[in-house]
Amino acid sequence: MLLWFLLSLFLGGGVVHSSQPDTWSVYPPDISGKFTVPVDNFEYNSVESFDLRYLGFEGFTEERKGRRVVLLYLGNEGQIESFYNASGFLFELASELSASVLFIEVRVCEEHVRSM
Image (tube, rainbow, N blue to C red):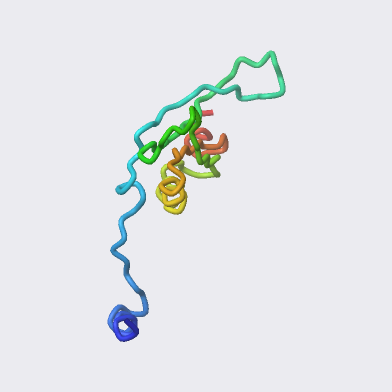
């Protein structure tokens, strides 16, 4: 093992390359969509709205006594697909907990900024 590591460092220019697949290809989202939310949550007379996107995977889900476990990722300032793809640990945890995984994007996302 040590010999392989040293050879890969020497022959690979110091970079160890991984052939590990990305999360998207292993656990492709089986639910996705949008839901409409108000632009201003504090002014009740506002009629402006926009759509928030969500992605989810229910491949591990088991209902127990009428209850389900959901691991929820509440976005970040970027494309939701990037965070879905970079969150392999959530899917490992979901498989252990028989849970669903749900990603919801945040409001300050590049797609929304362009559309407002």
